[in-house]
Image 1: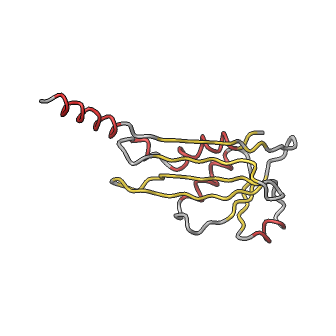
Image 2 (image 1 turned 120 degrees about the vertical axis):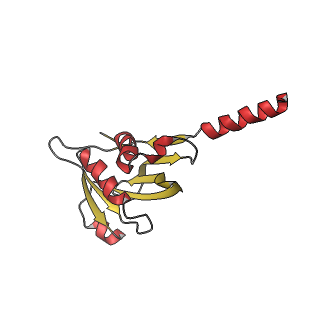
Image 3 (image 1 turned 180 degrees about the horizontal axis):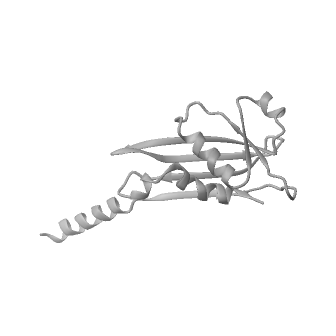
Length: 147
């Protein structure tokens, strides 16, 4: 085997095996009154696959927050929430579907962005891509909502 072929083969294997998962979080520092839980209004996004929203709500609620859904800005202004959130998520396919990317954005009552979280997994040999939505969302939510 020539040295060039060996080097090319090793480089190719490294690229294939170096599946990457990235997560970036800018925490949304929200205050809470002792003994009360924060109400997080989540704007509906019908372009995201049906299984994502229940997983997102479950993870947020497991951290002690209440979630309230809304469809438009009018509903938000009358819902008595402490912060609002928008989300997008995308699935990809590799033998079976998996959650490939998530973008979460948190806003204060004036509509100003106060935090965000992004998750992305590549479609390589990284087997963590097949973990459940909840498993992938938990570290994002834990870092996103800091009291």
